[in-house]
Length: 463
Ligand code: FAD
Ligand code: NAD
Image (cartoon, rainbow, N blue to C red; front, side, top):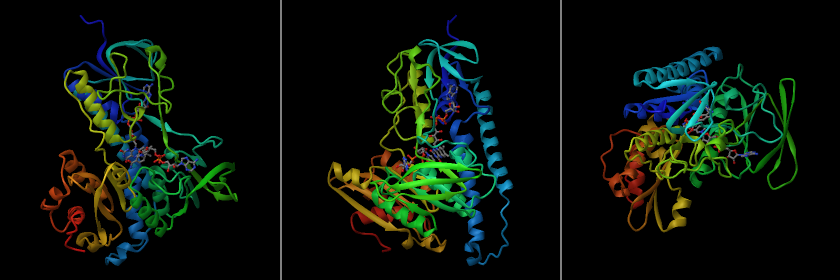
């Protein structure tokens, strides 16, 4: 009989960890997953992707009714916000999905070890005072909010995304520190529900890492929606008195300081890997300068039998990236070949319109060689125009010599859905011509991607 309690012990039951555990069990390995939260699903299901999308969806519908968009379609409504009920449906969504993972664990015979896991050796882990020995250990401990030095998060007035998902009333003025994905998604939620929203961003543009033209267009659209953007601005301090905050800001390059009075402050300046408490040193593991655990392409850490995936390793902090790494690591442990193509990971911001990108930005592609770019405005897409969703455009970046698609960037109401097609095309090594000559159903928003691909060779039809 084996000396090991498990073939695979996964630390963390987020989208990286729970998927790794299920796939390992499916492959016939005796698997356990340690999770310290009361429910499975990690950041994503409990306090991230899912609850934020529940609030984005509900607030979008509220805005359509309250701002008169529905009235323009001939639908007259009397609108009243029931925030408690809106939060209730958010909690129900989370409960349903986290419970679903528990069901999948039982179905696949993955044992849930409840508690905080820490290494006691290279193949041993302590969970809630009990020691377990495993042939393979997968670290999938995820990430938490990066604090802003000197700014205390109390989750009442000064919040992380977790507090900002749960506000008991619509704040008069919400100041968002950081114009990245979380700031814009949650800023949009509360703006739609009636708050005045100011986004303070250190850099000269929102959404670092995305295509330059897309970032500019996004800023234009958010401003049009009434969100106040303070770009190239840094926060120097936040003081709280009772239920109000004063946020001190000044130009990033130095200059005249000013203060913003706020009813709520959201700190969303990024997330950092969770490694504290794991006692990595007892397993002979170290972290890099950014606090991440480095791995090879197979997700092995360099210490035999210890693997790492998801937000705790380098790369974009995205649920689908973590999930794909979860499948790959389990397959590698089982002796198969698990691969993730990190060049084709789509990213989506779920605002209205949505903002999505995959592959190289135009700037990155140009730095590597000559490119051809095709663009098509959503204004000229029949379905978007008919649905009164004219904002945004699709952009296809292709290699000038081979026509291979290097990147696709979209601002459109359905960008998050449309980007899947681009990712699949790129995964298959498509040229812009391949997309241009693929028949797309009419009338759909996706036709804008076909037309942008046609524009790469200068031949779109509808513009
Ligand atoms: P996590 O989901 O963070 O899970 C790690 C788990 O490990 C946690 O449950 C934690 O409790 C547990 N854990 C940590 N240490 C230990 C330990 N020592 N012992 C036991 N358990 C431990 N991504 C998207 O792709 N799309 C989105 O729409 C999206 N929206 C987001 C919205 C918000 C507000 C936030 C905060 C994030 C969002 N993300 C989104 C990012 C996404 O949530 C993460 O990329 C994803 O959850 C990472 O998965 P993971 O498995 O690596 O880690
Ligand atoms: P982010 O990295 O997306 O944005 C942080 C922003 O804060 C950046 O624009 C940065 O320049 C700015 N910033 C940093 N320090 C600052 C300071 N002192 N003052 C003002 N601005 C400052 O981080 P986030 O929005 O906190 O999100 C964290 C992670 O969660 C992201 O990596 C993202 O991938 C993930 N996430 C994804 C989704 C999604 O996929 N839809 C949604 C939410 C979160």
